[in-house]
Amino acid sequence: MNFRAFLFIATTFLASTLAFAQSSPLIMYHADNLDVSRKRGTLLLTGNVHFVHDSVAFKTQRASWNRNTETVECGGGFLFTHPSGFVRARNGSYQRKSEIAIASGEVSAGDSAGNYLMTGQYLKYDRKEDIVTIPMSPRLYQYEKQKNGTIDTVTISSRSLIFDKKNSFAQAYQDVKLTQKDLVVTCDTGYFNRKENWLSMKGHPTCDMKNYHLTGDSIFLVLDETGKMLKSALVIRNAHGIQNEAPKRGNPGNVTEAFGDTLYCEFKKGKIERLYVNVNAKGFFYETDLKDYRNLMDGNRLDLYFKKGRMDRAVVSGKAQSTYFYVKKDRTVAGKNEATGDTIHILFDAQKNAVKSLRLLGRTTNASGRYIDLEKANRIKENAKRDSLAKLDSLSGNISKKILTKADSAKFKRSSNDKKLREFFNRRRENAKPVDETAKTEEAQ
Image 1 (cartoon, helix red, strand yellow):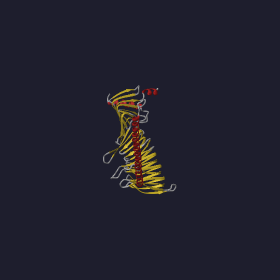
Image 2: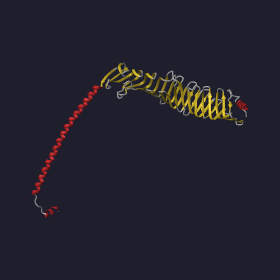
Image 3: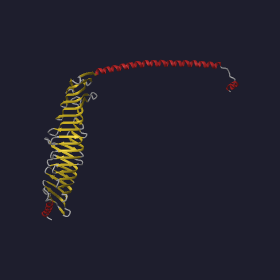
Image 4: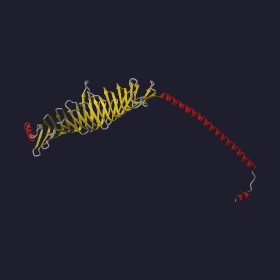
């Protein structure tokens, strides 16, 4: 059969089958071999099979068209192309009515511009909605070329994934992990809107970005306009945030932690600018060489402001309490300041990483503060310790003397008694007379 006759039979067969349909027909564009079964309503094709439907096309080595279900099943490789991308797999199928393509076995799908790539073992593509579903071991890679020629990659892995290509919106479920440069996010359920650059996570979510760590019941992240860096983070319920600054220019590193019901923080160029914690707010900060001396801030609300990643000022509101330690240049702790009030304003020296000033306001809670001289307290403690040791040494000496005196007396007494006893028995032996054996026997009886 020549190619023209072959194409004419195939097209006539398919056109008659699809005449009632509103959409354009599915056209078999090429195949090396054709086997028609009119009774079963199937068309079997092998060798370089090529189908076209509207703006989509797919190629395979073996294909079976079922007239009843209007489905083409493909084996021996499957390449599905559409205006915005492609799907490649070992096997595939296409449903003309629903315009759904299904691929299985080492699946990969991408867009024509090379901005994203998805992989998995099974994929469903809804052409009408432009939605890709990967229910088994999916991976989504989104690429952005930088001015210097490097590629910035966002990677999402999970147990199942749904990607809305029109809106650049991804939904991931179970064991979700998103990575982008220094940003690493994990959760049970995640939503990623690439178009508007935000992420929403729930189910044990965590967020790590270089020096920052966030956890809570749910986390909402906003990236900057470039989609490369974190702009803000909102943590709701059981919020916990940690900031770590490494040692720099001879200064020790520092750690800041905040707890509360709700936590919100803003970033600029990868550095934190502002953080607030609401409802049962608590925060503390310390320098890494003085971990035992933790400066505390506690109240209904806590607002922290930073400059270049270091604490600049803090406001503690509602039954506010604070404790901070005064550290000398030689890194010894001289004392601590304790304060209470309705509101406490704390100003920090960013260069020295120390508290510069403290201002207390009180209405319902009286404002009060006190300074505890730890050096003086340590001196008193050391003096008391020395006095106690001195008394103990003196008491031990007296007791030892008494014990030795009694021991020597007893020894002398024993030796004296022994001598007298020996003298008494010696005298008895000298004065003793012979004893009659008969009398001894009678006495014994």
